[in-house]
Length: 119
Image 1 (cartoon, one colour):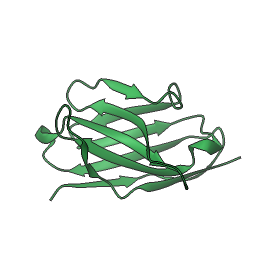
Image 2 (tube, one colour):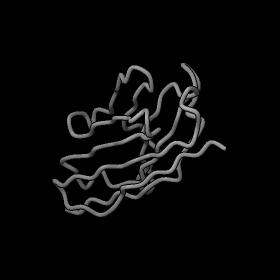
Image 3 (cartoon, rainbow, N blue to C red):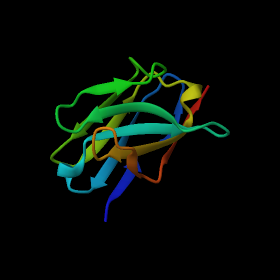
Image 4 (cartoon, one colour):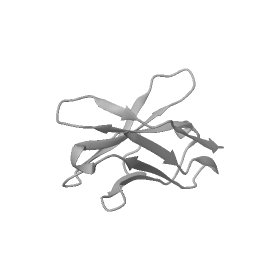
Protein backbone atom coordinates (compact mmCIF):
# COMPACT_ATOMS: atom_id res chain seq x y z
CA UNK A 1 0.00 0.00 0.00
CA UNK A 2 1.38 3.37 -1.01
CA UNK A 3 1.33 5.90 1.80
CA UNK A 4 2.76 9.33 2.52
CA UNK A 5 2.80 10.62 6.10
CA UNK A 6 3.66 14.24 6.88
CA UNK A 7 4.91 15.58 10.19
CA UNK A 8 6.56 18.68 11.62
CA UNK A 9 3.81 21.26 11.38
CA UNK A 10 2.94 23.58 14.23
CA UNK A 11 2.62 27.14 15.45
CA UNK A 12 5.51 29.55 14.97
CA UNK A 13 5.98 33.30 15.13
CA UNK A 14 6.68 35.33 12.02
CA UNK A 15 10.36 35.14 11.14
CA UNK A 16 10.69 31.68 12.63
CA UNK A 17 11.46 28.32 11.06
CA UNK A 18 9.90 24.87 10.76
CA UNK A 19 10.94 21.68 9.01
CA UNK A 20 8.32 19.40 7.53
CA UNK A 21 8.94 15.74 6.83
CA UNK A 22 7.12 13.28 4.58
CA UNK A 23 7.80 9.57 4.99
CA UNK A 24 7.06 7.49 1.91
CA UNK A 25 6.11 3.82 2.25
CA UNK A 26 6.55 3.06 -1.41
CA UNK A 27 9.26 1.52 -3.54
CA UNK A 28 11.30 4.57 -4.40
CA UNK A 29 12.14 3.14 -7.80
CA UNK A 30 8.60 4.14 -8.71
CA UNK A 31 9.02 7.83 -7.79
CA UNK A 32 9.81 10.39 -10.48
CA UNK A 33 9.26 13.56 -8.46
CA UNK A 34 7.91 14.57 -5.06
CA UNK A 35 6.45 17.89 -4.12
CA UNK A 36 4.96 20.05 -1.42
CA UNK A 37 1.66 21.84 -1.83
CA UNK A 38 -0.37 23.99 0.55
CA UNK A 39 -3.94 25.10 1.01
CA UNK A 40 -5.11 28.01 3.11
CA UNK A 41 -8.78 28.31 4.15
CA UNK A 42 -10.98 29.45 1.27
CA UNK A 43 -8.23 29.12 -1.33
CA UNK A 44 -7.16 26.61 -3.95
CA UNK A 45 -4.34 24.18 -3.24
CA UNK A 46 -1.13 25.69 -4.57
CA UNK A 47 2.29 24.39 -5.52
CA UNK A 48 5.16 25.15 -3.13
CA UNK A 49 8.21 23.16 -4.23
CA UNK A 50 9.24 19.94 -5.97
CA UNK A 51 12.32 17.74 -6.33
CA UNK A 52 13.33 15.04 -8.79
CA UNK A 53 13.87 11.87 -6.77
CA UNK A 54 16.90 10.90 -8.88
CA UNK A 55 19.20 13.80 -9.57
CA UNK A 56 17.67 16.16 -7.07
CA UNK A 57 16.77 19.07 -9.34
CA UNK A 58 14.35 21.44 -7.62
CA UNK A 59 11.85 24.14 -8.40
CA UNK A 60 9.94 26.56 -6.18
CA UNK A 61 6.98 28.86 -6.21
CA UNK A 62 8.02 32.50 -6.43
CA UNK A 63 6.40 33.19 -3.07
CA UNK A 64 8.79 30.85 -1.22
CA UNK A 65 11.94 31.10 -3.35
CA UNK A 66 14.92 31.91 -1.14
CA UNK A 67 13.07 31.09 2.10
CA UNK A 68 12.11 27.41 1.69
CA UNK A 69 14.37 24.50 0.78
CA UNK A 70 13.14 21.11 -0.42
CA UNK A 71 15.34 18.06 -0.01
CA UNK A 72 15.11 14.28 0.19
CA UNK A 73 16.91 11.42 1.86
CA UNK A 74 16.80 8.51 -0.55
CA UNK A 75 18.02 6.04 2.08
CA UNK A 76 15.18 6.97 4.44
CA UNK A 77 12.55 7.43 1.71
CA UNK A 78 11.81 10.81 3.26
CA UNK A 79 11.07 14.22 1.81
CA UNK A 80 11.73 17.46 3.69
CA UNK A 81 10.75 21.09 3.50
CA UNK A 82 12.86 23.52 5.50
CA UNK A 83 10.91 26.74 5.94
CA UNK A 84 12.73 29.85 7.13
CA UNK A 85 11.66 33.48 7.52
CA UNK A 86 8.06 32.37 7.82
CA UNK A 87 5.29 34.89 7.20
CA UNK A 88 1.65 34.89 8.31
CA UNK A 89 0.67 34.30 4.69
CA UNK A 90 2.49 30.94 4.81
CA UNK A 91 -0.25 29.69 7.14
CA UNK A 92 -1.88 26.67 5.50
CA UNK A 93 -2.22 22.91 5.53
CA UNK A 94 0.86 21.51 3.81
CA UNK A 95 0.66 18.31 1.77
CA UNK A 96 3.33 16.16 0.21
CA UNK A 97 2.64 14.28 -2.99
CA UNK A 98 4.42 12.05 -5.44
CA UNK A 99 4.53 11.83 -9.19
CA UNK A 100 5.33 8.47 -10.75
CA UNK A 101 6.47 9.60 -14.16
CA UNK A 102 7.16 12.59 -16.39
CA UNK A 103 3.90 14.16 -17.47
CA UNK A 104 1.79 12.17 -15.03
CA UNK A 105 -0.23 13.82 -12.27
CA UNK A 106 0.68 13.81 -8.62
CA UNK A 107 -1.21 10.64 -7.79
CA UNK A 108 -0.45 9.92 -4.13
CA UNK A 109 -1.05 12.49 -1.39
CA UNK A 110 -0.40 12.69 2.32
CA UNK A 111 -3.02 13.68 4.87
CA UNK A 112 -1.57 17.14 5.43
CA UNK A 113 0.04 18.96 8.35
CA UNK A 114 -1.05 22.35 9.68
CA UNK A 115 1.42 25.25 9.70
CA UNK A 116 0.31 28.40 11.49
CA UNK A 117 2.45 31.55 11.51
CA UNK A 118 1.45 34.24 13.98
CA UNK A 119 2.23 37.91 13.44
